[in-house]
Image (cartoon, rainbow, N blue to C red; front, side, top):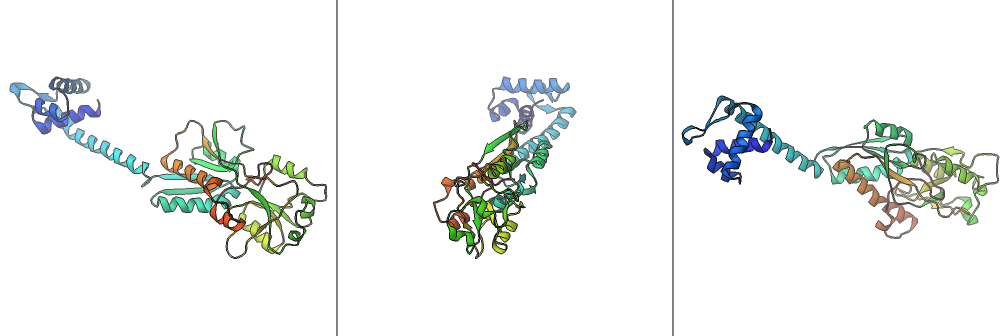
Length: 324
């Protein structure tokens, strides 16, 4: 039994004859008759009495006709619901973010999604990449955004690299190190040095840049951007962070601290999805939005403060970078 056969039955009831019904559904009369006969064969019941050139529905025909009207109405509602979903007037989105990605990317991305699609139901989860990966496999997330260097060997994942964002060390405007110009990482370690949790390879890269062995390069590790910024402003900490809108806000802005041999640090973020899984319209819209936000070509060249306010992204270095 097919919907088009039910549609033909409804047309027959509305038009009162096979000829007029065939014309209404743009079929030849023999084709319409075959369609009704096939429906009767499938249901193993006579639906229409054709005696004396009149169309009269049997009891079974009246029953099927009533249900056919309901089924056609349901099918039309499904069509309308899909159109609404494609237009994001309805639907849901479950997104995971690495802790530092949440600070860099979560707030502006969520704000833009809410402004563009106010009826969309959105749930954001913040966790480490391995936990997010587990939730993705259990279909509790549509996708997540994180530093993916430690996830490359995970099976069943599809990763879409995001554009790189510059990563730098930052300090408060009056920090004594700024007066020295370009400094070494060993000199920076005279002060607290803070970062988010970094991939193992990135930590090893930084360790190779220093001669000191009295303490770790990063003696403070925190995934909350607001806390890192507070440490830089109040405790003279040197912090590692991407140049994003989440870093500089309000009246107090942080300044880049040039570090010798560490001049081309970049993020290494990816959108992570299950392989061979079709994303929902909401998830597709989110991935496009995140990519545009992190694309350097989408923002004009500006000062540190202007650049930070015009872009939003995640965190992690390329030659060495911050990450989740």
